[in-house]
Length: 458
Figure 1: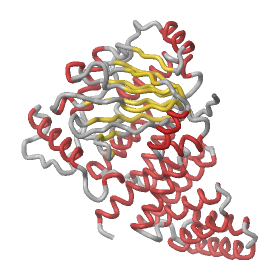
Figure 2 (figure 1 turned 180 degrees about the vertical axis):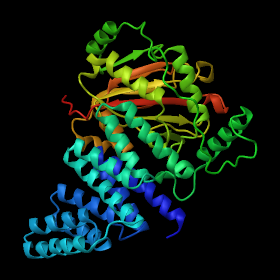
Figure 3 (figure 1 turned 90 degrees about the vertical axis):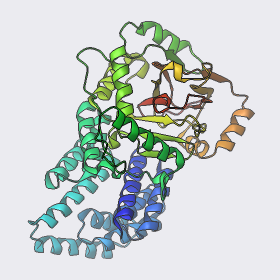
Figure 4 (figure 1 turned 90 degrees about the horizontal axis):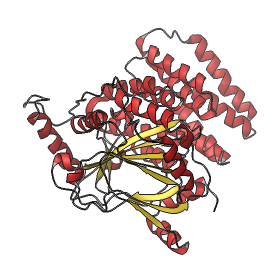
């Protein structure tokens, strides 16, 4: 397999695991099957598809996937255990015993001391950590990921999963440190699954403009090639607060409780220093690795959008707006950058979390229409996860559904340093965007997600 295909396969798998952890199993399954089109016998893709099949009650399908994973890597204790357990569940206990006994014989014969064995054991710990995460054993998963790193300090996936889990369990700054390490290890190799095999015009345009901007600012030498460029701007924690503490949290909470749909707008959300530093980080850092067909690109923590300032902002949101978050811990964050000419914005969707904090950072003078450029929120929410997955996958269906319910739309215009806090299960989308051309004029929003998806009644 060529290095380009290996690289693409790894990114597909990382995204699939992230989606599976978030409970978006339909989307994860599609990516695992995409991975199997690249490498039909890939053990991890088959193993994780086996987990999804078993969760859906498709026992025979689960056994088949576990068998393929096991046969592709017979030395894997995890693959062996999953296969044997599925055999027991399907009534083939005799074969399960044979599979288990073979593993015990191999274990007794294995020296387990050289570099190859350490790398193999590291991968085992990584997969074990993923399995424990699925089971809800977060301390055990964290320990497994740490052991994987100890065995192989250059294993990007281990930093990715450890960092994500630490951040989601309240250790945001520590988690972001590991996610940044992952970004440094893979550097410019993060090709987004959505962009395979060739990058679309809006991504090519953005990278060309960013490369020229970094040279003009003296941040990189003029001889630095644009391909696989990796540069991270200053993004340190601030000595004071990152959030504007002049806001009345009591008034915001009152608006939140009275609002329908449940959303509240907060202007001057960040301090001036925090806003300027975040803008600089977004302009200079080559973290924009995720590509979307609708003319926009994204930045994720695993690609380097995980500086200490972002951890500080996340922590302060959690403490300052504690009553609105109602105990929901940090789940995920991402940033999205829209091309001024080529973007059509997001489709109507709901998010797989409880509360969304959406922050706009582009200067107001870049927006050619001050009445738009922000977001539209409907007063209808996804009632359960099945409905969320169904309508997120079909823009025409959700539009017809909202029309049938005579849903009311709330428009929130774009303003620099404006945050919108809203119930994530509410259907919403990016509003019409008309921004000036030019690298620093691109519309950017940062989304902070808190908590698990909550079913919503009507």
